[in-house]
Structures are given as structure tokens and as C-alpha cells.
Image (cartoon, rainbow, N blue to C red; front, side):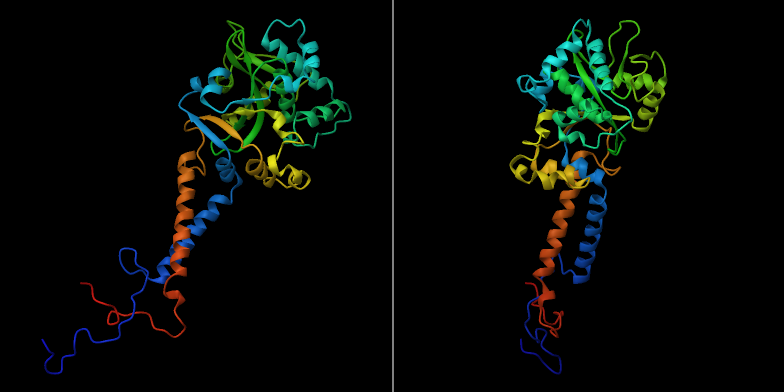
Length: 365
């Protein structure tokens, strides 16, 4: 029907393409920029804390209870990527370890003999071992033979290596906070006679045991006894130690969450293996400052694997491990969508070109 009088034709005007900001309706460039800024800030907050990044770099396995965390090495090897060095690869440590445990009658006594030996290597004046535990047992043990004083992680690495050379099983234990900050390193060793893990602390140079049975306690059992102060019996060297029992109690109160290390194959940290196919750049990678050295280890060498009881650690105080990974993925997806949208939209129109208006826009049919 033709128009009449002075009324303009309802479709009169220029035909120009509508804005391509269409997310269920037209969206302004300012809105997309705000979304981009918001998600970028959230991403910056999340990755600015090394503990958040570390939690994501590690391969965490959560189990519902301590009972499952204390499964035998064979069961752990079946259900999780529990790793150890081969006994044959540690043949050079075996003669020393055999001489140390000769005549011992229990796993706890054998561990004490090895621990006492490590402390006996110290010389005065005190010189601290600068090499990180990630230099591997060969480097650490050589430094100890020179009389250098090692810390909890360095000593635990060497003790675990001696223990494994005898055919035993071990796993490193990390004491930490609910948000994953690590404060202390120790060990659990497998007691084949009693068919259970028991906790050995090299700073204490000893272990706790049940008064009635004399059986060494696991880290979970020790923690509950330390916090209550009841029925706590410790066998430790009276002089060769860095911690008193009170020091260990304070450590557990400050770092109440234990995580178990699954990759206990310490030779993977040696000079010719540490960074995998990138080991030709060992000199540069090993000199990276913390935490970039850890990041390089996880990206180029063997990824750190951990076992933890569900709900003990919350990444950023809000997320489980799964939730943290989903959140990070969401942020990256949203930032990508915003960037692609901004690149392919009317922000690219020539200068001076007015944005589409309702008159310019083709009506919906």
C-alpha cells in the first residue's frame, strides 16, 4: 500500500549491516571491554599467587579417607601413579645401607640407624647445604659426606634412597596449610612386618609408636596424638636432631595438612635426567630463581604427583582442585571470546563511520 500524506515510508533509510555484537541481542563495545577487564583481573589475581599455580601444576589425586591414603605400596601402584627408583639402580647405596641396618630387629630401628648415620656426617663449623633437594640424592649425599648440614627435605631424600636400595618402600610427606603452603618435609616408610606405613621425621630423627603394641605410627595417627598430647611416645636420638618434640608439635599446628608424594623416584632429578628432552639446557634451567625452577621441572621433566584427603586443601581458599581447573579454564575461554569479538566487530569500522542505528538496521522478519 503506497504511503499517503506527509507520513514517511517506514522502511526509508540506508541499509547498513547491524552491529556484530550479538550475544542474544546487541551488546555495546563498552560491555565487552568491561567483561574482558573483569576476567583479566580475575586471571591476574589467580595466577599472581605461586601456591595457586603450584596446585595446578601438580597432579593431585584426592581420596575420601586416610584409610585409602594408607594403602600398601602394591595397591597404590595399582590405583595411582606411585613411582619408585628400581632397587638395581641404587646398587651403589646398598652396601652402606646393609652395614647400617645389620643386626636391627625392626623397621623403626633400621630407620633410626640410617638417620643417625646422616647426622654423624655433619662437621663443625656448621655449613648449610645450599643445593635444593631437586639436585637429586647423588649430589646431596656427596655434600653430606663433605660435612655439610642438610635440611629436612635434603636428609629425607637421602634416607629414602638408602631405604629403597634395601628393597623397602618410601614416600615423601609434605606438611602444609589448607591452601597448600609447604612448611616441612618428612617421610613415611613401609613396615613390611606390620604391613603399614610409619612416619619418620629427620628433623626429629625419630618416630612415634603405640605404647601398647610398640608399632610405629603413621603420619595421620601421629598428627592426632600430637594435637592432643596424649599417648605420645617417641623414639629418637637424644643428641643428633634438629627438632625437639615441642618443635614438631608447633610445626603440626602451623601446618596441619599432610600431602603424600607419589613420585618418589629421586634419580629422575639427577643431572642427566631432570629436565627430560630439555636437559641439554640444564645449566640455564637449574639456575632459574624460585618458583620458576619448579615450573620448569613440571613442564619439562616429571610432573609432581600428590595424594591428599578430600577437602583438606582449597586452592585460593575457594576451590577444590577440580574447581580451580574449571575456574581457570572458564577465565581463559571468556578472555578469548572477548578478544575475538572485539577484533571482528564494529571497532574495526573506518574512523568517522557512525554506528548502526535502528533506522539503519534491517527489520526482523
